[in-house]
Amino acid sequence: MSRVLKSVDYEVFGRVQGVCFRMYTEDKARKMGVVGWVKNTRQGTVTGQVQGPEDKVQEMKAWLTNVGSPSSRIDRTNFANEKEITKLEFTGFSTRY
Image (cartoon, rainbow, N blue to C red):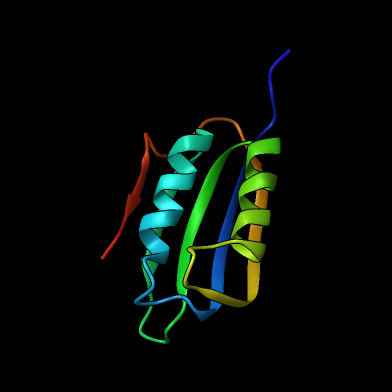
């Protein structure tokens, strides 16, 4: 039985820059075994993409919505382009600049 792989784009709003949000996101993703990327935007948000088994992607979405880094304040998280994929497009999880 093959597990369903999912891909989803995200954007996190609130106090998410200057609070190690990207570092914690990368750390959480690696511990969970999902791949993708994270980066700061000029608008003061954090954006990125997560790919992996459906249950892990759902868990990561919950973390991006409710947890974040210890000093962050998440006002809302938008998810877009959620879809099933046949294979992972990334080999790990990285911070983009």
